[in-house]
Amino acid sequence: MRRILCVIIAAAWSMCLTETASAAAASYPVRPVRVIVPYAPGGGSDILARLLAIRISEEMRQQFVVDNRPGGNAMIGTQIVARAAPDGYTIGMIDTAFTINPGLFGKMPYDAVKDFAPISLIASSPIVLVVNASVPVKSVKELIALAKSSAGKMTFSSAGNGTAIHLAGELFKMAAGVDLVHIPYKGGGPSVVALAGGEVSVTFSPPATVMPHLRSGKARALAITGARRFAGLPEVPTLIESGVSGVDAEPFWGMVAPAGTPPAVVKRLADVFARHVHAVELRQRLLELAFNPVGDTPEQFAAYIKADIAKWGRVIKASGARPE
Image 1 (cartoon, helix red, strand yellow):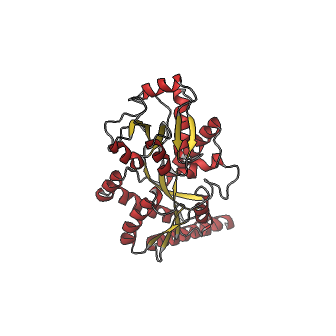
Image 2 (tube, helix red, strand yellow):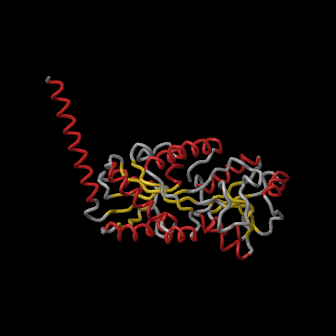
Image 3 (tube, helix red, strand yellow):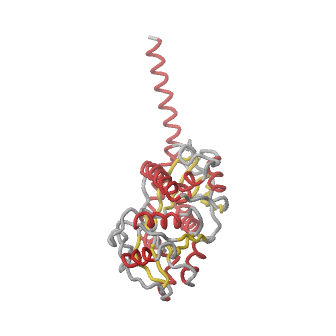
């Protein structure tokens, strides 16, 4: 009898807690929400966070305030999220550095899986394989042939050691069986400028960064990562169409909260983010900025993060990439 009574009390208490959590989620947020961006203003993470913050602030009738905390390969700002109170009032924008860093650094100030509650994968972007206009190739097949005939002489630039751009190049080298010499720069902008100026022969870049140089004729796009062609460069084939498989390198951007944030709050945020990402007006704006809108569920994003960490870990080990 006593056991039955304990079970009934426990069930009633559980129902009470569930109802309390649901009520809290329904009224959330009751004060401003801080959105940590682990980069300086102006980059892809910052642009996405601000586009979303404006719209979500209007819908939820509370300010979603973007707080830029750059440094430490994005780990300084991300650590702030990990250590914040798990109440939904501090969330963070993450990108591919989040899933690359565990394989790149032996020691980190947080656990990329255990210390966060994934909210939603907001967007992704393909990477374009580009050559300087003076390089005498017009296809991936011709580039591979030229690289093989001049092994160790052709160079490719990146946004820095261990970045998604660098690792995309390493994946291409492994998949195509070519030897390109890596030249790291301090950011994607300088990397593309070096390509356009002829300092290097090849680079990999998000479309938005390299587009002005493609239009000016200083650079030539040969292929793009991903399973489908990019709407902004419809004439450029995918690497798969060009005969090179295995270059699975698409930068992503998503939102996370500290681990322990109530699931009802996480779901509410995910639903709101996804709704805005799929809204016609914002979707069109994201496409214009060379982002592929996603807006998925917390469960889907959690699975994506784990798979991406494993993927980049393998690439880093195979390439021997080291942090700067």
